Image (cartoon, rainbow, N blue to C red; front, side, top):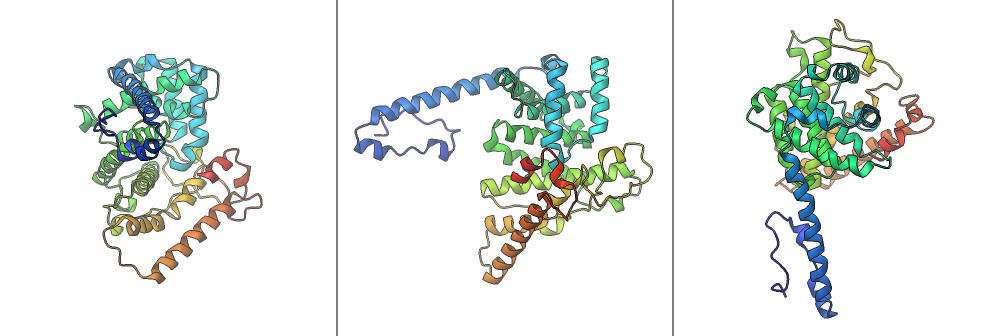
Length: 350
């Protein structure tokens, strides 16, 4: 029966290639299986062909591929509402200023900002629901692949900066959210982790006296976002986490709104007890060390764990889930006002 089917491409993973032929053979429906296989393979080739053509778009002309300002504004708004609160990759007030400058003087925009904007638009396109949504989402593949080509290109050493790390995180998020090569994102997650470690993001910011309050807070946010992506991808793909437990310091972030801190801030703002732009990421980070430990146990080589330890970690995880549920409840005592956020239902599901 294997001879009936065309050869399976080598870059298909096992889940995609696993077809139950025996059941069809018993019913005499092998021709239907072949037809289905050919249709799936042809569709896949068409999608890959579009991706190949998109890769040739040079980053210098990428801005010409952006939609009109009204659509861009909507896509940025979707990113800011749905994805930014969980990962806080960008400082949105600074990004908004750079975006306005880009609209006024496109030629003055830096390449790194163009890449950030391209990926923000690509992520926002997932939530875009107008009549031309399929056209916008198809164009988003151009933005993603162009940004990927730029950050992995010959000048990649110059991207080993905080803006470069932001682009890398946005690239992983855009690939994951738009299902662009999602099965291979763990490869890039390893590079992201190495990049963050090389910048010393795993060290306490107090060890760097020359950092400004803004720089300290951004380093914390990006380190948390890096660990969050790592634990998600390693759990999804059931592979061991190579990062040692002693290297996974979870910094304490400030519970403040974006406008409370800026590049020129000389003093750290006073944290609030109510809902802020940082609250959702802080809630997720509160269980990050626990989730990393559980992921190490699930996917590690050593399997000799006591029942009492498993029950203890399970109880702690359930407690964290209840805390998150309380955070989003209408009468939340954990963080008053959390349920009033219009995107709270989306983040609760996440």
